[in-house]
Image 1: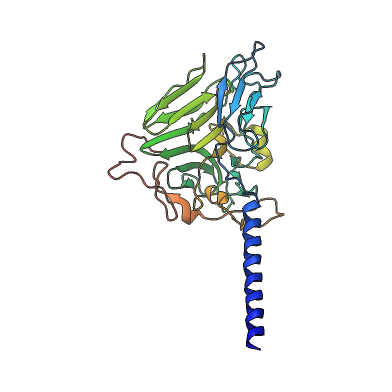
Image 2: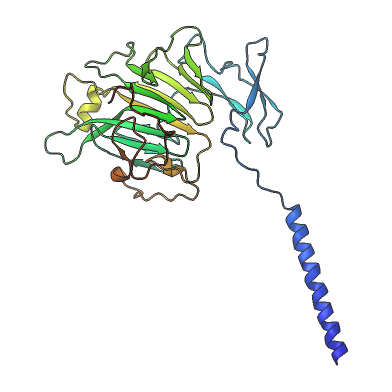
Length: 348
């Protein structure tokens, strides 16, 4: 009897070992999900153009597009159109899409990471929402370990309303020990041909050329910063390497828009404001901010769906003392010790 029990035990033990080996073998054969890299889209090396002028890119992003050469379409042979900035540019995507396509180089107000109108967001989760803030207020749009973006709101409150109509007039992008400010200049009457864009680098106004490459760039110890015109006036693309890319356009509130929405704007102010679309790189899982938090993994939007204007609260969480302050109740970004954030920089 004892011998029989021992034989049964050994048989059961061998069965367990066999099952564990089979499971382990199956796990080894199971393909691993590739790690997503935020910069896979633009992880490529520029090659010499074809005789036709079509630019080429040699993809270096891991995945199905690794070591493949992409050629810009003949309809948009250059990534940066030289003769007419309003033309579509070639967009090289070295992710699993592995394609070169033609796109306008401007903010898509219905796309992920957009901030337009009064003001309306589309989050990293694709959910649209409104955030009113307050006229004259400053709010953290994104706050992470190595990046902080504030927005300055302008607005008006017609008689009889309980809340302001608001728009984003300026953005400050803070990283490392630097601050880049992009703002719309206040104008009484709008003219498409007059540049109403203000750009400041560490407190000093900079001029964006309109000829040649039509760009301003600087290399810091940590990264490269480029501000490039995407139209003759009032439209730029901003790149901060390793952190963020932004398409920004300055636009006014037109007479018809003012009438339809009953803004009741004064006749001597066009309420020039920014339309922006952000593309972020290397955000942490704990990123904060009105827009930033929508990029968290497993984020679930609290806004009410199916209504004309789904509202997102959080003014108390993300209000900052100035456009250039990275401090708020839920902000994560911190300047290096001894850094004077507001030194030499005009306030908004």
